Image (cartoon, rainbow over the protein chains, first blue to last red):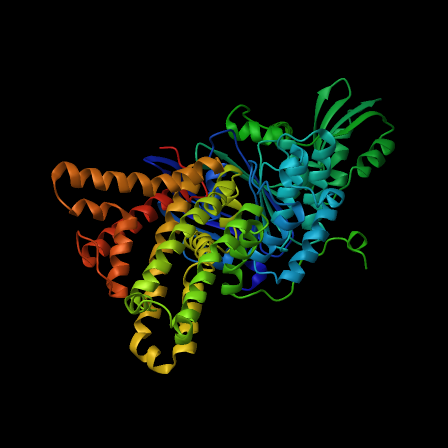
Length: 329
Length: 286
């Protein structure tokens, strides 16, 4: 198996117990591909087992059954090697208060194996990168909450890891800081080619930065979706409102390979096949002498996918539209 | 190019070896410790006694300076096991106070700021973290204990000649092993108090109290039960008993060196277990 095809996380019937209580009940999945610079989101309500999964992947908790591999290395036996390739940003405050940011980061970089000179350079670089350049000689205990979050992110990436594990990175941040944090995460994967594993209960954050998402509920995976594909496929679901005689529209839709269902009063739900862009609808409407009053690209939000996975929705709107069209056909 | 203009780029260069990485924590801890004036001052004061001992060695090796002294007194002032035992008692006392002063900053700051998950998410195991912290205290106390002891031994060898070395080389071994045993106990006590008490002053007081309380308890047991094995419950006494055997000086009344070593081994085991319980990246509430 070459490096390109190694999954970032590979779980095989993973079971984890805390005390006598089983938290993860035999999870099996493969997440991300090493070296691709993609982000995987771990979603789930409180108590779903997200943090337990992360702690197990980091080797902090021992699986009671099954295997967990991170970057191809077993979490029980090869963690020493794996850890020099991982950066971890915990959810809670984690730092050494009496140290200045630059000393703290330098120490962390050296612990990951960087030579002292390179560690010092990287500490300065990364502090400027996360926006703490001006306060890098201040003791960490004097930092505000938002600054501490950035310092935690900085220590996670100072040694240039292949995989960065972020546990609730935007927790407690104001909107501006949250935007900056998400931008940094996107930059980490797109500019630096790092794989990112984000654990969050904020759906919008996951939707914004992740390419793949796993939804956990009661210690089991209830949904695993490729957000990139979801975005692509959902683009084909269109809500259209026209004025004019639209009786022939149903017959004309196959011209562009689409299918649709009329909801009456000029309203249509149309499902476009892959590769057909929405401009085709405009052309078709023009040929049918129809005036387009409204055209919406309706796509399933991650929230709708999440609610469906949690059992609060029977179908996402996108699925409903496709089913309606199929039934009508 | 200035750092702020350069922008962040992932590090792709060579990595350091395991031992270099292991020494990172001690290096940073020593730097922080010696930034404290009190630690520095006490370390300096701890050198006074070795300097006086060096003067004593010089004196004993210059017979002409002792001409006017009483012959009985002249026979008393000799560099032997007794001399080194007195040197070790005094330096061991300084070591206790230094450990109480420096020990609290070993683990407490990492625990109070929840820094352990950050350390353990790096290629650093719990055991190597604990060993690194122990290295901090043992390294720091070595400067005032067995290193000056060995220097004194070297000075005596230099002044007295090779015959003295041949006759007394075991003393050097006794100084090193004896002090390392004491430093191990001190280091573990300091780490345990640092792991359980977040306030530095209290943690320092706890590590001092550990020795005084156990000494009191052992005396009490001896008095109440009219025995002498209670001494082995006092680690300071037990270490002293081992030293006496190592230096071949008259031992105090009580259990032998074997029993003392056994009790010290149990102390070490208990302290290791106590520390192990606390050094976890995550605390599981059962």
